[in-house]
Length: 303
Image 1 (cartoon, rainbow, N blue to C red):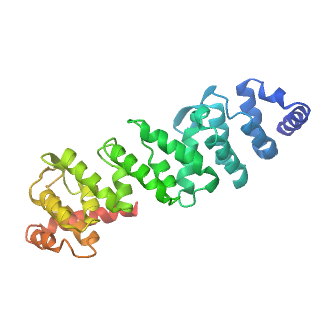
Image 2 (cartoon, rainbow, N blue to C red; image 1 turned 90 degrees about the vertical axis):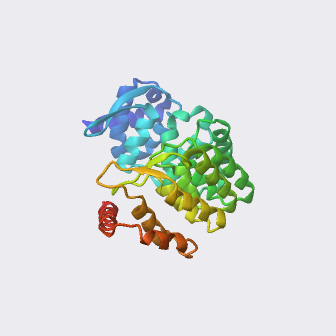
Image 3 (tube, rainbow, N blue to C red; image 1 turned 60 degrees about the horizontal axis):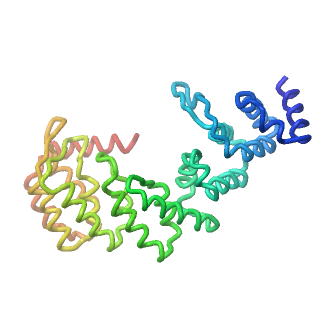
């Protein structure tokens, strides 16, 4: 029966593609799923011709999850799930989204997937569109997109450095407190022009406040790692403040800031520039608690 329907659809589309594109969306998706297996080339054409379709439908994306998606989102989701389209076909779909992003923002989720999967090799043909999108994100004080940032920065163009800096200055303060993707970017790319950003973050968000530090979580891990990337007197002074002048609390069995910072210093201070702080901490750490943290980290990293 499915093959008969597929043959009927093929003949109908060959006669007039308009027929299938104007049919009921539920029936269209039913036929589309069949064609993904019976005729993926035709399914690909249907997907391309529906990228502007903003009608929505609720579908099961896993055994216990329902999501509302637009029709083209569903089509791309099904195609990726079945690996029905070639790499070239998927790249064409992404190109159609990127080059018309202002009217296809309902597909931005899959664009983010593309950025994540291809961040190390950004497509030169997309550069103008990606830079324009980056400029739009910078203009909107509430917007941030770490996937876009990583993809864009890997073009490695000197003329983009100021734009990236402006993005970081804004986005670092808009992130969720439990994990800051912008701070992580600075840790991975510690340019000198980013140092004032983490100093400002410390002064506005860290100095004078109280933070969680126990055997399973250290709230200042990222900012500590960030300053360790900059072996200079200012970093040393700020790290001394983080170690000796900052208040901590525990949601576990003990307060662990000395042990947590000691571990970070041993793992990240490759130049031994902060060795003076490390030595001071050696007399303050509890070796039993230190081992508990190391054991927890090892178990977590194996997950």
